[in-house]
Image 1: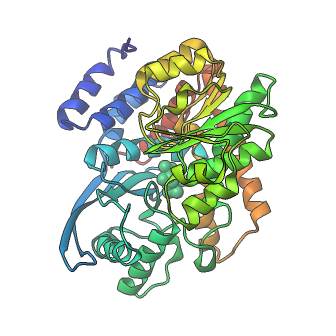
Image 2: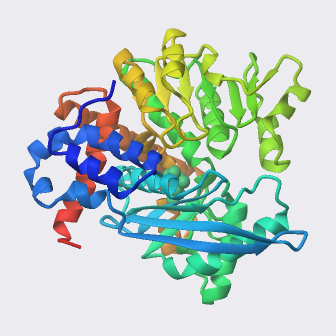
Image 3: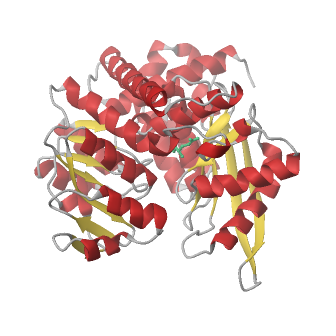
Length: 449
Ligand code: GLU
């Protein structure tokens, strides 16, 4: 059953649906935030007066462009590029680029909208934005990926700048793609402007820990939630969906903290390894060979590969959805809770459906929504911007300490807000309210812009 929206907020939501037809993921992300905001308007009538909710739901600028490129056969291909510059009240637009065939405006807007609050929670001076393309990097040659990235940047570069808009990676965009885009930006502008993109390679302006940051940060966040309940990762059986950048480094940190990850996945199937996922093997398959996770089972006889399997049916104590949106539905959530799962930390953006969230909240388990739990990635991007601005490069240890501190602070901020608003431990409310208030206050201060 859906939570009823506050009577002042319901018409705003209806207007969002009307103005953005068919963008169902965007509607879902907006609704999830608005459900938390009723009590905020009571405490802060000025936000209503300044129409902050209406303004925050409307991107400051949306760019949609054609991306023509030639494949290896010499055939012309056309993709669509997006950059949604959602909110710059706290700093330059900041958020990743996603290259995936499912990308359309509704996906980029849901991601950009969530990014506003996530970035606010980090406490760093960054606004929210997101971009990407329906380009599918899967099966493309190195040269095709490069040509696509260069063509994408020929349009995007004019909208970027270290004080304007700073993209990074997301699904389908890692340091390889960032490299090709940075190279093209540098060529067009004749400027070595390191701070214009984050997620760069360590040899050319990138930050240590950026690769690991989203996964590590999500585990730190879950660790904080567990600590509140007098628990830890030690000895816990965990599931981490996905096998990309977020999943790999979540697994690494869980293993460092004494937990055991028994399964991971990709869009084709699930790998179950009762002895615990062999991470060096996953890294070799995914990061070096760029192959599918099914090949894991060729190396370990004890491991089981289930094509099209559902990872959430495997019993666990901690679940970390780290693949993509809406990967846990109500039935999955019920199964997880029934099987003894007591903590969920979202490495992906919006991986749990509204029905799933309801199940977790009603069961009273520790549920860390993506906006708060996976903010370590973008927070470390902001640390990369700091290093670029001061032409400095920090050690792994120092940067990781900063990341750990940021995650601790996000957890504390969210928790305290849930107490203040009478729903202690409801991190959905915590993240939405704490993130919203920061942005709303800045928007009021900056006037009607
Ligand atoms: N795409 C990541 C996210 O969802 C990181 C964005 C960034 O580093 O700017 O937060």
